Length: 462
Ligand code: HEC
Ligand code: HEC
Image (cartoon, rainbow, N blue to C red; front, top):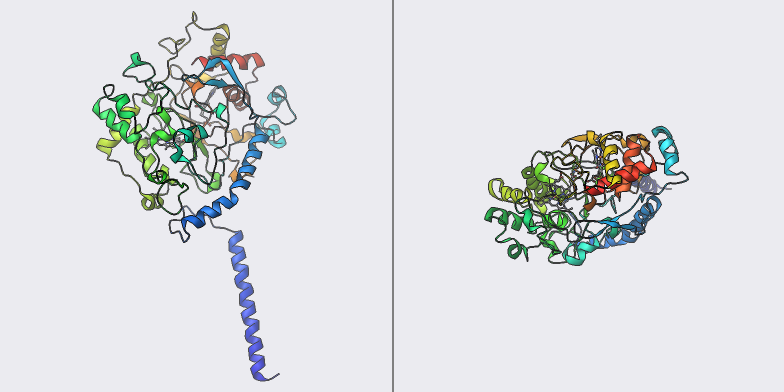
């Protein structure tokens, strides 16, 4: 071997070592993916490439999520003809949560630790349809009316019978004499003026126009990483796409203010009926006014709380002194649906109520202590509470979501509650029966089967 060959071999050896080291570093970096607070604003892929990558995982992610839903819930349609939502849709009946190897009565006798140890808690946090991906997701019943909201990469997950009316009723505090103003129509930019001109003042009318006007949002905009094919989709979403007719269609999203992604909560669109009597807004953020929420929703929540993404995708900054106030003034006249059995204190009138409803009210105010957080007349204390549901389950990763604490969550009002399934901030309780089972466990109430039925009867009357 001459000196030249030796040098060449040594060089090959060094290059080899370097290559191995580089591969090790790359593999290592892939394994320990650093989590960033920011989304990828500087894309180096085209729309077609991003779309192909999303479509490549679509079927598998959908299957994993449906397997999870099927393991946790009975998804077959079950409704009652005894009571309907204000718009006429039948109310879903539960409990829909599946128990594995125990009855509700047996579960009721177990301590939180035991339930946690055996993995038996039926109401763990609900992951988003593709939790690693997130974004706004609209139910099929809404897509039928507003096809521009279709995402190419993700289908809605919950069955339609556990969602609100597709075109919910609108009641105005200013004109109760009119009853439902929407009358089965869905309010959009195409019809808002003819329906509301002469009913609203010009300020409220302009507020409503802004509430039905599309503005860019994370998945619906003109950039390469949008999730819509439709040219009218790139214009964005409107407030009433989710809060349809001022109520909700069960569209969902991930909360913007938690990182990393697996700790973010799925959030179900809340109704905007009755925001006038509420003092805190957002299930977890506790913004102090409807004006704050209206302003901030489009500025940051639309973009996952990522202000740099908002700038890239086309944030619409509303003028606080005029536009925000106009929108909030319309929102502030959205009334709860009529509850003909309640008196001026929000209590049942005994002459109008059934025995089951009256028994349910007594349990609600008495032994079950629901009223300590949900006092009449609107059945909210306008506060936040930590229900510590994590006493009942282990912190583990499920389909890209950490089964972690919920933390402080706002007490949603229970007026008109039968109109807005699914329940809780993430929609994990599909029916009122499920919410009663949930609180029976969380509060350790040990209610009887009859008491649970009575409570549901009372909730339906609100
Ligand atoms: C995904 C569809 C979606 C769109 C579009 C949307 N929202 Fe919301 N909205 C939500 C969700 C989900 C929440 C709950 C947020 C939370 O829990 O932090 C919410 C909460 C609110 C609240 C607080 C309600 C409460 O009970 O605390 C107000 C007010 C509100 N939105 C107004 C608006 C306005 C105004 C717009 C348009 C600028 C808008 N929303 C657009 C889904 C949507
Ligand atoms: C310690 C306070 C507290 C008590 C006691 C309490 N709740 Fe709640 N309630 C809450 C909070 C907070 C939420 C929201 C929880 C969430 O979204 O995760 C809630 C949500 C609900 C919801 C769903 C509301 C919606 O819009 O999705 C129903 C129904 C409900 N409670 C009924 C009851 C009943 C019935 C009882 C008594 C058996 C009860 N609650 C006891 C605080 C309480």
